[in-house]
Image (tube, rainbow, N blue to C red; front, side):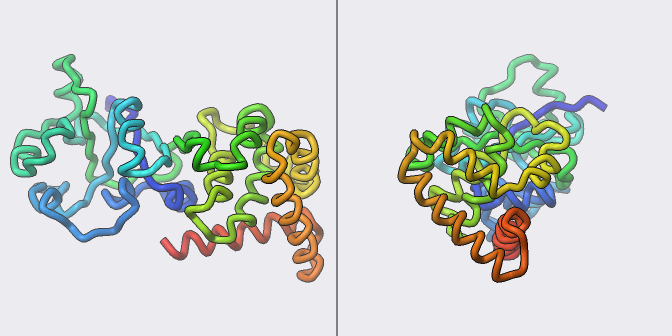
Length: 265
Protein backbone atom coordinates (compact mmCIF):
# COMPACT_ATOMS: atom_id res chain seq x y z
CA UNK A 1 0.00 0.00 0.00
CA UNK A 2 1.72 3.18 -1.23
CA UNK A 3 1.18 6.23 0.96
CA UNK A 4 1.89 9.89 0.33
CA UNK A 5 2.00 12.89 2.64
CA UNK A 6 -0.53 15.67 2.20
CA UNK A 7 -0.94 18.93 4.11
CA UNK A 8 -4.09 20.42 5.56
CA UNK A 9 -5.06 23.83 6.94
CA UNK A 10 -7.51 24.77 9.65
CA UNK A 11 -8.21 27.52 12.14
CA UNK A 12 -6.13 27.61 15.31
CA UNK A 13 -9.25 26.88 17.36
CA UNK A 14 -9.45 23.42 15.77
CA UNK A 15 -5.93 22.32 16.68
CA UNK A 16 -6.50 21.07 20.25
CA UNK A 17 -9.41 18.91 19.05
CA UNK A 18 -7.43 17.60 16.09
CA UNK A 19 -4.55 16.62 18.36
CA UNK A 20 -6.95 14.60 20.51
CA UNK A 21 -9.37 13.22 17.94
CA UNK A 22 -7.84 13.47 14.46
CA UNK A 23 -9.43 14.83 11.30
CA UNK A 24 -13.00 13.79 10.67
CA UNK A 25 -14.67 15.38 7.64
CA UNK A 26 -14.34 18.20 5.16
CA UNK A 27 -15.49 20.45 8.00
CA UNK A 28 -11.99 20.25 9.43
CA UNK A 29 -10.55 22.01 6.41
CA UNK A 30 -12.51 25.18 7.06
CA UNK A 31 -13.45 24.47 10.70
CA UNK A 32 -17.08 25.02 9.74
CA UNK A 33 -19.66 22.25 10.06
CA UNK A 34 -21.91 22.94 7.10
CA UNK A 35 -24.21 23.23 5.36
CA UNK A 36 -23.48 20.93 2.45
CA UNK A 37 -23.19 23.18 -0.61
CA UNK A 38 -23.29 22.72 -4.38
CA UNK A 39 -19.68 21.52 -4.46
CA UNK A 40 -20.42 18.81 -1.90
CA UNK A 41 -23.68 17.88 -3.56
CA UNK A 42 -21.87 17.14 -6.83
CA UNK A 43 -19.57 14.59 -5.19
CA UNK A 44 -20.43 10.92 -5.65
CA UNK A 45 -20.05 7.65 -3.80
CA UNK A 46 -18.11 7.68 -0.55
CA UNK A 47 -17.18 11.33 -1.09
CA UNK A 48 -20.76 12.57 -1.23
CA UNK A 49 -22.31 15.01 1.23
CA UNK A 50 -18.97 16.31 2.48
CA UNK A 51 -17.79 12.95 3.83
CA UNK A 52 -14.10 13.42 3.25
CA UNK A 53 -10.90 14.85 4.65
CA UNK A 54 -9.14 17.15 2.22
CA UNK A 55 -5.61 18.43 1.74
CA UNK A 56 -2.94 19.32 -0.78
CA UNK A 57 0.38 17.90 -1.91
CA UNK A 58 2.00 21.32 -2.05
CA UNK A 59 2.96 23.19 1.10
CA UNK A 60 3.54 26.28 -1.02
CA UNK A 61 -0.05 26.11 -2.24
CA UNK A 62 -1.25 25.59 1.33
CA UNK A 63 0.59 28.74 2.39
CA UNK A 64 -1.32 30.66 -0.28
CA UNK A 65 -4.62 29.49 1.26
CA UNK A 66 -3.97 30.51 4.88
CA UNK A 67 -6.25 33.53 4.75
CA UNK A 68 -9.10 31.36 3.51
CA UNK A 69 -8.75 28.30 5.74
CA UNK A 70 -6.61 29.35 8.69
CA UNK A 71 -2.98 29.07 9.80
CA UNK A 72 -3.15 25.70 11.57
CA UNK A 73 -0.88 23.34 9.62
CA UNK A 74 -1.40 19.57 9.75
CA UNK A 75 0.08 16.73 7.70
CA UNK A 76 -0.97 13.11 7.31
CA UNK A 77 -0.46 10.27 4.86
CA UNK A 78 -3.01 8.85 2.45
CA UNK A 79 -3.27 5.61 0.51
CA UNK A 80 -2.74 6.93 -3.03
CA UNK A 81 -5.22 4.42 -4.50
CA UNK A 82 -8.03 5.27 -2.07
CA UNK A 83 -8.22 8.99 -2.79
CA UNK A 84 -9.54 11.26 -5.47
CA UNK A 85 -7.61 14.30 -6.61
CA UNK A 86 -8.26 17.27 -8.87
CA UNK A 87 -6.75 20.73 -9.35
CA UNK A 88 -8.35 23.28 -7.07
CA UNK A 89 -8.90 25.72 -9.92
CA UNK A 90 -11.52 23.31 -11.36
CA UNK A 91 -13.76 23.66 -8.29
CA UNK A 92 -15.77 26.46 -9.91
CA UNK A 93 -17.50 23.73 -11.94
CA UNK A 94 -18.41 21.06 -9.34
CA UNK A 95 -19.88 18.58 -11.83
CA UNK A 96 -16.74 18.65 -13.97
CA UNK A 97 -14.49 18.57 -10.89
CA UNK A 98 -15.95 15.38 -9.46
CA UNK A 99 -16.53 13.62 -12.79
CA UNK A 100 -12.89 14.10 -13.82
CA UNK A 101 -11.25 13.50 -10.43
CA UNK A 102 -8.80 10.59 -10.40
CA UNK A 103 -6.92 8.69 -7.68
CA UNK A 104 -3.76 10.39 -6.50
CA UNK A 105 -1.82 7.38 -7.78
CA UNK A 106 -2.85 8.26 -11.34
CA UNK A 107 -1.63 11.84 -11.03
CA UNK A 108 1.68 10.68 -9.56
CA UNK A 109 2.12 8.07 -12.30
CA UNK A 110 1.65 10.75 -14.96
CA UNK A 111 4.42 12.80 -13.39
CA UNK A 112 2.57 16.04 -14.13
CA UNK A 113 1.12 17.04 -10.77
CA UNK A 114 -0.57 20.46 -10.60
CA UNK A 115 0.69 22.73 -7.83
CA UNK A 116 -2.84 23.19 -6.52
CA UNK A 117 -3.90 19.53 -6.57
CA UNK A 118 -6.66 18.85 -4.03
CA UNK A 119 -6.54 15.40 -2.45
CA UNK A 120 -9.64 13.90 -0.79
CA UNK A 121 -10.00 10.70 1.19
CA UNK A 122 -13.38 9.39 2.39
CA UNK A 123 -12.38 8.27 5.88
CA UNK A 124 -11.27 10.13 9.02
CA UNK A 125 -7.60 10.47 9.95
CA UNK A 126 -6.84 9.05 13.37
CA UNK A 127 -4.79 11.25 15.67
CA UNK A 128 -1.84 8.85 15.75
CA UNK A 129 -1.44 9.14 11.96
CA UNK A 130 -1.17 12.91 11.74
CA UNK A 131 1.34 15.54 12.74
CA UNK A 132 0.63 19.09 13.82
CA UNK A 133 3.29 21.52 12.65
CA UNK A 134 4.28 25.06 13.58
CA UNK A 135 1.20 27.12 12.70
CA UNK A 136 1.59 29.63 9.90
CA UNK A 137 0.95 32.62 12.13
CA UNK A 138 2.43 36.04 11.45
CA UNK A 139 4.13 38.46 13.81
CA UNK A 140 1.03 40.62 13.50
CA UNK A 141 -1.09 37.78 14.88
CA UNK A 142 1.36 37.24 17.73
CA UNK A 143 1.52 41.00 18.41
CA UNK A 144 3.73 41.83 21.40
CA UNK A 145 4.42 38.10 21.97
CA UNK A 146 6.30 37.65 18.67
CA UNK A 147 9.81 38.20 20.11
CA UNK A 148 9.10 35.77 22.93
CA UNK A 149 7.92 33.10 20.51
CA UNK A 150 10.99 33.65 18.35
CA UNK A 151 13.25 33.28 21.36
CA UNK A 152 11.88 30.05 22.84
CA UNK A 153 9.65 28.21 20.37
CA UNK A 154 12.46 26.21 18.76
CA UNK A 155 15.44 27.02 20.95
CA UNK A 156 14.09 25.95 24.36
CA UNK A 157 11.22 23.49 24.15
CA UNK A 158 10.94 23.13 27.92
CA UNK A 159 10.45 26.88 28.32
CA UNK A 160 8.13 26.94 25.31
CA UNK A 161 5.82 24.32 26.82
CA UNK A 162 5.70 26.13 30.14
CA UNK A 163 4.93 29.51 28.59
CA UNK A 164 2.36 27.78 26.36
CA UNK A 165 0.31 26.80 29.41
CA UNK A 166 0.59 30.33 30.72
CA UNK A 167 -0.52 31.77 27.37
CA UNK A 168 -3.58 29.49 27.35
CA UNK A 169 -4.60 30.90 30.71
CA UNK A 170 -3.89 34.44 29.51
CA UNK A 171 -6.11 33.89 26.45
CA UNK A 172 -9.01 33.02 28.77
CA UNK A 173 -10.99 31.37 26.00
CA UNK A 174 -10.52 34.14 23.39
CA UNK A 175 -9.54 32.05 20.38
CA UNK A 176 -8.81 35.09 18.24
CA UNK A 177 -6.41 36.65 20.75
CA UNK A 178 -2.63 37.03 20.38
CA UNK A 179 -2.31 34.94 23.54
CA UNK A 180 -4.06 31.95 21.96
CA UNK A 181 -2.02 32.32 18.76
CA UNK A 182 1.09 32.40 20.96
CA UNK A 183 0.03 29.25 22.80
CA UNK A 184 -0.43 27.42 19.49
CA UNK A 185 2.89 28.67 18.12
CA UNK A 186 4.64 27.39 21.24
CA UNK A 187 2.75 24.11 21.41
CA UNK A 188 3.45 22.72 17.94
CA UNK A 189 6.67 22.86 15.93
CA UNK A 190 7.84 21.12 12.80
CA UNK A 191 10.06 18.76 14.79
CA UNK A 192 8.37 16.49 17.37
CA UNK A 193 9.20 17.15 21.00
CA UNK A 194 11.71 14.87 22.65
CA UNK A 195 10.49 11.95 24.70
CA UNK A 196 9.96 12.76 28.36
CA UNK A 197 9.59 16.51 27.89
CA UNK A 198 6.26 16.72 29.69
CA UNK A 199 7.53 14.65 32.62
CA UNK A 200 10.54 16.94 32.88
CA UNK A 201 8.23 19.95 32.92
CA UNK A 202 6.10 18.44 35.67
CA UNK A 203 9.15 17.54 37.75
CA UNK A 204 10.66 21.02 37.50
CA UNK A 205 7.34 22.82 37.92
CA UNK A 206 5.77 24.58 34.93
CA UNK A 207 5.28 27.79 36.91
CA UNK A 208 8.97 27.82 37.83
CA UNK A 209 10.07 27.10 34.26
CA UNK A 210 7.71 29.78 32.88
CA UNK A 211 8.97 32.34 35.39
CA UNK A 212 12.58 31.60 34.47
CA UNK A 213 11.78 31.84 30.75
CA UNK A 214 10.18 35.25 31.23
CA UNK A 215 13.19 36.42 33.24
CA UNK A 216 15.61 35.20 30.56
CA UNK A 217 13.73 36.20 27.42
CA UNK A 218 11.23 38.78 28.59
CA UNK A 219 13.42 41.80 27.89
CA UNK A 220 12.73 41.39 24.18
CA UNK A 221 8.99 41.52 24.77
CA UNK A 222 8.51 43.64 27.91
CA UNK A 223 4.75 44.21 27.59
CA UNK A 224 4.05 40.55 26.90
CA UNK A 225 6.32 39.43 29.72
CA UNK A 226 4.68 41.81 32.18
CA UNK A 227 1.22 40.54 31.26
CA UNK A 228 2.26 36.90 31.54
CA UNK A 229 3.91 37.54 34.91
CA UNK A 230 0.67 39.03 36.21
CA UNK A 231 -1.26 36.01 34.88
CA UNK A 232 1.25 33.71 36.55
CA UNK A 233 0.83 35.38 39.92
CA UNK A 234 -2.94 35.33 39.59
CA UNK A 235 -2.80 31.63 38.68
CA UNK A 236 -0.65 30.89 41.71
CA UNK A 237 -3.30 32.58 43.87
CA UNK A 238 -5.99 30.54 42.10
CA UNK A 239 -4.05 27.33 42.75
CA UNK A 240 -3.70 28.15 46.44
CA UNK A 241 -7.45 28.72 46.68
CA UNK A 242 -8.00 25.32 45.04
CA UNK A 243 -5.57 23.59 47.41
CA UNK A 244 -3.02 22.96 44.66
CA UNK A 245 0.69 23.59 44.36
CA UNK A 246 1.53 26.35 41.83
CA UNK A 247 2.88 24.02 39.13
CA UNK A 248 -0.03 21.56 39.09
CA UNK A 249 -2.35 24.55 39.42
CA UNK A 250 -1.08 26.05 36.17
CA UNK A 251 -1.54 22.74 34.35
CA UNK A 252 -5.00 22.27 35.84
CA UNK A 253 -6.16 25.70 34.85
CA UNK A 254 -4.86 25.50 31.28
CA UNK A 255 -6.40 22.02 30.89
CA UNK A 256 -9.77 23.29 32.06
CA UNK A 257 -9.68 26.10 29.51
CA UNK A 258 -8.73 23.66 26.73
CA UNK A 259 -11.65 21.44 27.73
CA UNK A 260 -13.96 24.42 27.31
CA UNK A 261 -12.54 25.04 23.84
CA UNK A 262 -13.04 21.43 22.79
CA UNK A 263 -16.60 21.34 24.11
CA UNK A 264 -17.38 24.54 22.21
CA UNK A 265 -16.25 23.07 18.89
